[in-house]
Image (cartoon, rainbow, N blue to C red; front, side, top):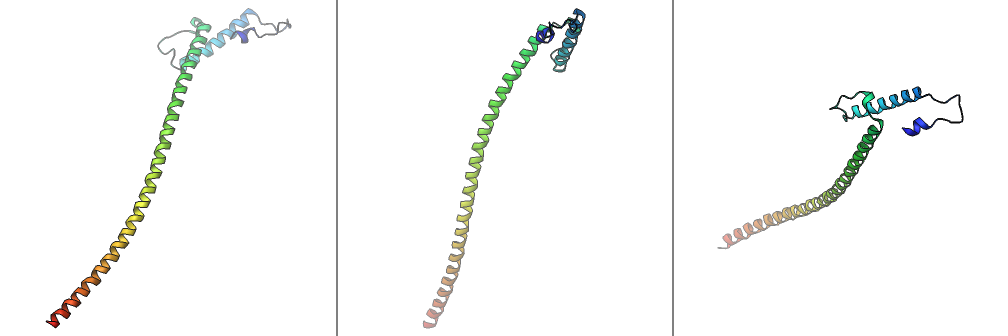
Length: 140
């Protein structure tokens, strides 16, 4: 705020601001900062008029809020990285499970084919046994 207020061109006498203009600028800036805090619920418990707000205190609170949000953002980013690594692990395990399921389905298919083949062989064997029993009965 000091840079904004003190940033006038000292070499130009015609454009120099009066104390009254500086007070108006300060009031406008204080009002703007006050509204930011009111919107952020920083002043929700207090009913403070614009004249009662100390600009330096307001800036200090803004800085603290910014630092707090920065720390919270860093923590959330770390959580996000952890969740992403967990997601990657789960996706890898899911892919492994999918591959295992595919292998098991292929093995089941082979076993079903083998079972069908054995059932056919069993049926043929029963027919041969019946045929041999018939021949045995005839022979007796």
